Amino acid sequence: PSPRRRVYRDFPGHQKKTVFVELESLSCNKDMAALNAGAPQAPTDHQATAAVRRVILDHDGGADDIVALALLCAAPFADLPESYPSVAAAAVTEGGASSPAAAADTQRLSELRGRCHAVALIGVVVTDADCYAAPAREASEKVLKLFEPLRRSVSARQGSAAPAVPPVRVASFKGTAEPFPDEWRKDCIAIGDLPCLNTFDDAAAAPGGDDDGFDEGMTGEELMARLVLDAPAPVTIVVTGPLSSVAWCIRTHGRAWCDKVDEVVVMGGAVDVKGNVIATNLPKKVPTAADAGGGVPSVDESAEWNIYWDAPAAKAVLTCPFLDGKLVLFTLDATNHVPVSQPFVRSFGKIHRKRGREEAAAASALFPRHPSSLAQLFGSAWAQVTFLALQFGETRGYFAWDVLTAAYVLEPRVCTFYQCTLDVNATRGSPSEGRTFRVDDKSGPLCRVAKDVDNGAFYDLVRLVAAVV
Ligand code: AGV
Ligand code: CA
Image (tube, helix red, strand yellow):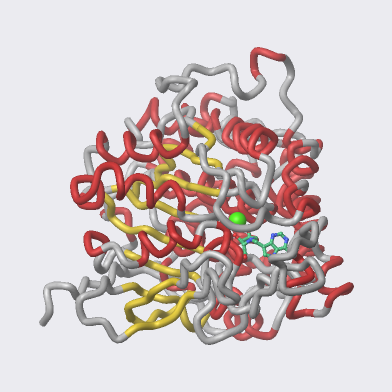
C-alpha cells in the first residue's frame, strides 16, 4: 500500500436514528423521514475516547459561514468525555433544584455526544472576500461570545482544549481576481445586527474587548500559522472562503507547518458539475479596448467562487505535496445536495419556540440561555437568502455550502468520498480561471472529494444542534 494512502478517520457510534423525537415532526424531506423510520439503535461506544479535534475556522462572513462558525462552537458540548453527566449535575445543583429543562438538556446533549466528534475551536480567521471584513469579524465575535459561558464552564471543570475566547483576526488578502458581488458581501452586516446576536447587557460584556492573548495587530494568516505551529497536537483547518491564508502558511513555513496540520477541510471548487461564477454576477467593468465585448469579463462558468477569488492560492494548496492525504474538499458536486429551502429554514421557528418555553423555566447556567437560541440565528441568517431560489431557480439558490463542510468535522459520515488528485486553472483572465479538475498525476497530493451526501442526516444534525443550544 502506498504510504500516501491515509486511513480514513472513522469512529463508531454513529446513530442514524435520532432519539430526539420532537424533531421528527420537522422532517423537511423524504430522506429525513426515511432516516427516522428505522428502529432505534442502542448507543454504542462513541467517540468519548477519541481525542478532541483542534479546529481553526477560516471563513469569509457569508450567512452560511456564520452558521458554520456557530456549529463548530456548539461542538464543545461533545468535548465532555466520561464526566459529562457530572458536569450537567453540577450545573443543575448550582441552579438549585433539577429542572425539566436541565433534564432535557442532558438528554439532548448525550444524543449530540453520541453523534458528534469532540471539537475545540482554537481560532478564527476572517477573509475579506464574500463579506466586508470588519462587520464579519464583529459578527464572529458576537457568536463566540454566546458560547463563552459554556466554554468557561467546560474549561474550568475539564481543562478543555478550547480557549474561553478564541482569537479572531482578519487576513490581509484582497484577492487577485474579481471581488464578490456587493449584495452578497453585505449579508454579514445584517447578521451582526440580528437581535439574537445583540443581547449583551453592557459594553464590558460586548465582544471585542477581551484579551485573547494575541497581538491585536496580527493578521489572520499570521494567527493561523502561529496557532498551528504552537499547538500540542495537529490542527484541523476548516476553510469556507478562499485559500489565501493557507497558501501563505505553506509559502512561509513550508513542511514544518504542514506536518502539524491534521486535515485541511475546504469548501470550494466544482469538478463534474457547473461552477457558480457566472457572468451576470461579476461586477461590470468599465469597458476598455482590451475587453472582448460588453464590458463584462467573460467566464465559462466552470469555476466556484472561493477558488476563483484567489485561484493561485487554491492551486498552491491543492497541489501542495506536504498536504498529501490531508486535503478534504466539499465541491459544488456535494453541496448541490443541500439547498437551503424554505421548509428547512422555516422549521427553525418551532425549535425556537420550544427553546423559548424551556428558557422561561430554566435554572441551568450551562448553556448560553439568551432570550434566544441558535435556532433563531440559523433561521434568521438563512431567511435572508431563501428568495434566491424563488427568484433565480433552484440551481441558483442558496446552499448550505459551508455548513456541510463544517458538519463534516462534527460528523464525517454525512457524506462519502472518492480520492483523486486535483489541479486549478490559475491563469489570470482565462475563461476557466479558478476551475478545479482531476489530473492523473501520481506524484500529486491525494485529496478526498465529497461525493454522496446524506442530506437528511445533515439537516437533522443542524437542527439537533439548534435545539440543544
Ligand atoms: O460558492 C460558495 C461560497 C460558500 O463559501 N460562497 C457562499 C458560501 O459562503 C460564494 C457564493 C456563491 N453563491 C452565493 C455566494 C450567493 N448567492 N450569495 C452569497 N455567496
Ligand atoms: Ca463562505
